[in-house]
Image (cartoon, rainbow, N blue to C red):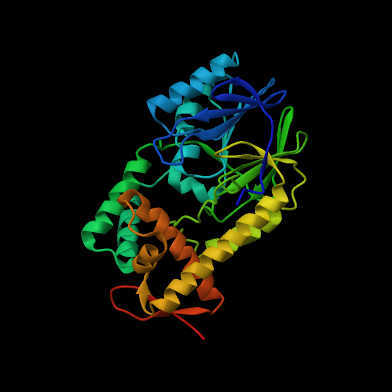
Length: 342
């Protein structure tokens, strides 16, 4: 079934540079991930703005420099860097860019600890994730492989960035570019979109993609998180809010910019509800299943690098169903197991 998103016509400056408006460009940067290239957006003018960074690999950094050179610009020209969310392909090179430009970097405060970790944070994160993987039903060796895959991805992110916070409703007046900040929690709980009020562009990153649905990703809880988060419910609410945007064009983190934003939001909402029903059906057929067993029922066998993503999606669906009181968790000393109600 074709997506509800309607791709716009762009002027192709080069294979990796696409002009959206007179001073807004989509730059494609390579990543080592199956999703392929990531979009960053360069907004030209007296005070240039960059939205997102790509990964911190030599190939990606060189591509960014070459793209800017084609536009007769350089990293040093960037006056402001806006980060949509703290995933490695969107924030990995923030430190490198800040060091070369001296620009301020804006990001939601829930993501600050990721780019500026404490000395013992990785060990605490590792312990939490290992416990989560084990309670999901992974054996110790498989849990270690899954963590090692996460560490490999984290190695493509540079740490130690001077950050400024942005949150819902904030207005950033950056010379000729003015943005309104929209919290879009769900894919992560630090995700924001930036609405360019004059150009009517909404920079949505992974929150709203044209052809695929970004899954809610598992996060180590913050100290202020006193109860389990419900990322799928957050995502659904964010999509309802996004559907009301005044922007006419969505500028996503992957793929081409598109119109028909409201219909695409509704399409993703429907997909998420359908996936929850898939999980509910699988659980009804296998009472007492663990997260790992449900993941295998829905996705089949996956590589170690994909365990995090598939378990994230299963966990989000289960939390959503738990809060709807359609399932319950069965007490078990070693592994979390679930069963349907009614």
